[in-house]
Length: 107
Figure 1 (tube, rainbow, N blue to C red):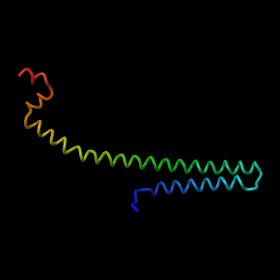
Figure 2: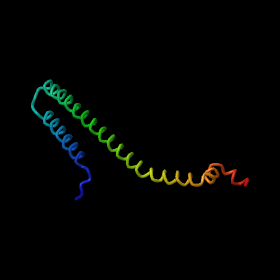
Figure 3: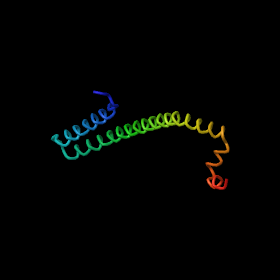
Figure 4: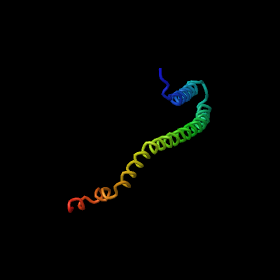
């Protein structure tokens, strides 16, 4: 099986599974309502911190991947731009004609 970068997805699934299991254990445990509510509040604060950390990591990965994609696009586009520029520089009259189609018709 090919590794397509699903390690992050596995980690997120693992963490979410742990959170759901912890919540189920809290809700099914024989405690007073106030104790259960306090536990839920404490756990929700911890889960929020984890979610914020995961979101920050996702943002960083997205920025990194966008930067890599932009660099790859520049690498592919630059040779084409150079070729077009070279052709324009070799024959500037034809470049002017391409810019102004009326000039072509008048000649």
